[in-house]
Image 1 (cartoon, one colour):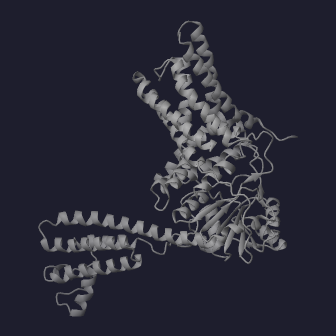
Image 2: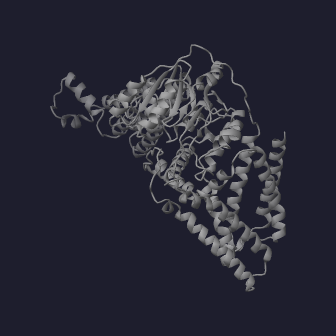
Image 3: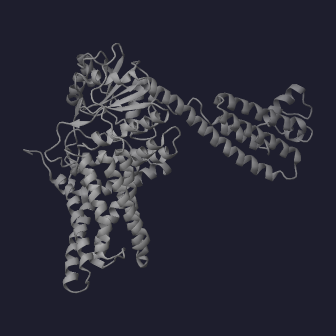
Length: 632
């Protein structure tokens, strides 16, 4: 009840502030700067609203139901280039899980020594076969899909190579699957090697806690790629449905292109009513095919019927005026002026596919539809049980499951212990991949328009994706005090006390809400990194847009499990540059005030505090870059 009251109060105060800012404080003389700052504040306002929706229905499940006996479970351990010593710890612990199961190491590195070691441990070993040569591999998702087609357990426990499971993990989560609509159960990811003070912001107690509990209340808990048990049936149904949807989308696109081509052809045949009539018949066949897709008819039947109809119309065009095109027939190899009926029919069939308008247009349309590959020859398997539209297959797959009406569960109990990145370079690479994958899903399968999701599910998925756009707002917030303190540029027209009177109540209540929700949790580091990693968020947006719309490869980088020796200071030059500008700005503000270049003490104080807060938040990357393990 307290949390809901604070959420409502926070939203009221936020709405009060943002409305006042938009209507009464804009300095239109500096409209680019003023609009940029207002846009950043609107971003924060939307973030505040979406966070409130997430927290509105916190769900604490308590003791799980007992596990049903006799279920079949496959434990998948995904690996690519991790050392055997690390994989062995996970594989041995997985083998010793108390609930009966089969354990498999999915080695995407195809290492003979890994195979021999798995055989020595008495566990299964799976690699990709030659069918994958020359095909899209889909990184971790492809590794899991390959294993699914080689195993048959009813349930899958997925573990990253470093996530060592506890013996009771299956006993603690399988009971949730007595509900036949539950597709997956996610447990927290926790790391035993987080350095003191968590300099890299590895721990995520707010996410693997209140945020996931809030999503669970809306049946929107995320699948996070590891430490989760999934129902095979649910994944296979998702694969089948999205296979059909993908083919239907491709077929619709081919039919749309066909309509454009046929209409252009028809326009060019203004003086040939017989040919225009033939094109109209093909246009009618296209319309019939489109209605058949909408009615849910099998796609194979639709394409077959259309091809036969297009072929019939093509042959009729030729037969209807054989005398007029006899000259063309005689130009074909083997033709003579006196054609037997058999020869004429054969040549007629050849001519019906030649590039003679409208025959060329009809032939092109048929080729367009034949190009819709029902067997998906570019893929090893036509049906993909996990989403392959993103390098973060987990979130995309969870969203598809929810869109089909499946349920999810977040079980808040540490049942596997992992290995955190041990240097800033690895941590930043990991966050970049998460951001890129999440934005890929936003651009390719936007939850706002995803059929089947409830309104809260749309909001919660969109909220997570939206958060990775924060780099733009962060940059505006960081630059704004610099522009005022150094150059005197003020995008806000308001007395400082009036400004604080609107802003401070929102900020105070927002922090109280955050403190109540995160009570007892170490959330400060996460707040710092949400701002300090603004260059990563900006890079993620740029590279993901290039990938989705320009076809540029992102690649899939496995997070290193051993400390990297790269010079971390070279990774944070944008933050260091901004910090230097903020220091200069603070000094400039005091100098301008002391020399009388400005008399607005309140505005200077507000911007100095703003710049000081930004410095404190950004300083986390300096500490992370300089961190070294004891004894190194």
